[in-house]
Image 1 (spheres, rainbow, N blue to C red):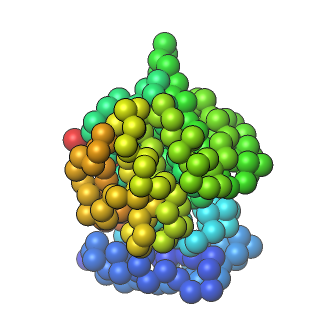
Image 2: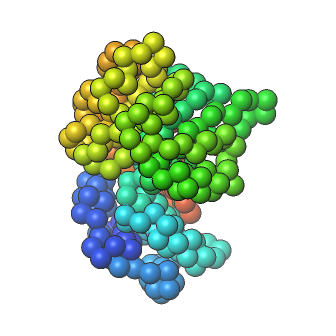
Length: 294
């Protein structure tokens, strides 16, 4: 008899995300176990509990999801979990802290509908946050032989934070990362000068670009605003925009991107139960998104 599908949701926060729990149930998970306030030191016993209760042939029906608002804490949990596996005794893993991996994948794919980002200039406003960092990581990626890496302006109100994140990204990928200060409207406008694409990945309800941003001949070709709470992160973009032309730019709002984000999120959860050796992190989630949008 086929074992029921069990998803264990690990969250370093005091309370497990209700958003992630509901998406899991809507994706076909039969039993959801939530573990909140989890630390790396607690992971081994919890993961072994998932591994040793079923035979190898049934382990594809148990999977782990890692969420949470603090990306660094979530990544520490994922790394600790992967160290628990050996031989065929393992279960599949999906990491999506604060929705950053699925959101970033969807945002980049939306922009790529309109241009090849190779060699282009990209501005990421609030680029030091979890979604901004993932966008930068996906766009840079491993460079193809002979290809021109994109120039990625990673923006922050604090230039030292931008420099630190750029250093971290350079250690992982092939992009040309430029730390850029954008603490006010004038600095944000300067940050998008000559950019082909701008992403706004800031906090809810914070406007990052003022109304004059797309009234210039060198406005970005594509603008993606990931803020779903008024006011928009990029002035004039509607939350429902999904390729609408506003001024000189093709625009996407949070819900316009969110349809693909949810499609990726749900399919990733379903994939966990196809085999017991899936590890879905930012690059794998991006490739999944490309396949779904192909």
